[in-house]
Each structure stands twice: as structure tokens, then as C-alpha cells.
Image (cartoon, rainbow over all chains, first blue to last red; front, side, top):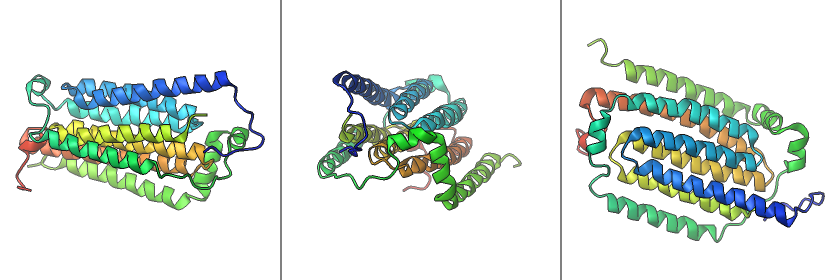
Length: 186
Length: 100
């Protein structure tokens, strides 16, 4: 499964058990926290649980040698997006919200559909074979740091998509202002 | 080294929790948070692919997904505010003017 790099040091049994333990803790925490996010009746609790969830996902990125993305996860998701959610929750009447029905009428149907999708994904995972390996093995990335390697590929090979993303963000800014301003004058 | 399949199963689990939350909750804000959950599930599998296939393109894609998720959150929350201004509700089953 893993690219068998000839110079890679074989990791000892203790290291493997430690890595597996950390992964199992992070995976269990991520699954439990995400279930908590969608079942809390108080939306503020949901947002705070999601904050914890994003920190665990950032930890998972660190174990996968993606330090820059771990930082982005904390700064953008936990720092910016969740604060936006908290601001919008200020609109809600929380006391009324906690007494209201949590789920839509046909919620068992939605649950069955989700479980069917899970079955399809898990069954399709069995026939999964990884593609050919690239050049960025751990040693290469470690030699020039994750952020520098990512920046190089982002600003050369992916320069055009990067510019397109800036346009997407511009549209989001304009759209958010238009949506929020509408009706203020009338 | 942890098998890649563990990461894919974790990603599938988080994605399914997001789908279940989106299909079952009434509160539109929680539904948006479920969408963020699904995006994060995809990010987990992309970062795992990037690590196990020794290719940084997965991480570049995650970078773009984070940017699009930020844009989507801003627009979506603007729509929620517009809905709230017109209907004074955050429950999707009470906003039924379109009779879809």
C-alpha cells in the first residue's frame, strides 16, 4: 500500500503501536464529536463541539505530514467559519429553539438513505487500488519543509486555479453584502 | 504505518454523519454545519491520499476546498439572514413558499 521507498527506515513495533494508538484516538474522537454536532439541540453546543472536532482533524493532518493544512484548518475553519456560524446563531431564539422539534418529520427516511450510502461507499472501498506514487516522498518534503513544497506547486502548476479561487472569494464577498443589505432601505 | 483504508473508512464515516445530519435536522444552521462536516470528510481522505501516494496535489486540492468552503459559508449564512428577515424562522420545513 505504502510507497516502498528503499531508503525509508523500517519503523519499530513500538513506533507502529504508538502511531496506531494516536490514529485510533483521533478517529474515535472525530466520529463521536461529529455525531454530537448533528444531535445537540442547542446550536451553540453544536458549534463548540465542532470547534473541538476541527482541532482533532488538524491533529490528524499533523500525523499525515500536512502541517500547513493543519494550520489552515485551525485558522480558517476554527477561526473564521465557526465565528461566522456563532454570529448567525445570535439571530435565533435559543430558548425556543431548544424546546422545538429537532428533526424533520420523515427523519428515519433520511437516516436510511445515509446508511445505504455508507454501505455503497464501504463496498466500493474493497475494490480500491491506489494509483502510481508521486515524487514527494517524506524525505523530499522534509528537506524543503511542507509549506515551501506546497507553495512551489501552488504558485507554479496551480497558478491559474489559484487566481480562479480569488475570483470565487470576490464573488462571495459581493454576494454576502448584497444578501445582507437587501431590504435595509425599504 | 497505518493502512490507507483506515483513513478512507474514517472519512466515509464522517461524510455519512454529515449526510445524516443534513437529511434529518430542521435547523438550517445545523444543516450548513453538516455540509462543513462533509467537506472535512473529503479533506481527510485527500490528505491521506496525498501522504500515501507521495503527491502534494491532494493538499493543493484541500487548500482550494477550504477557500471554497469559506466562500460557501459566507454566502450560505447571508441566505440564512435573508430567510430569517423574511420568515423569522430557522426551520427549513416552515419555509415552504416555493411549494417544492
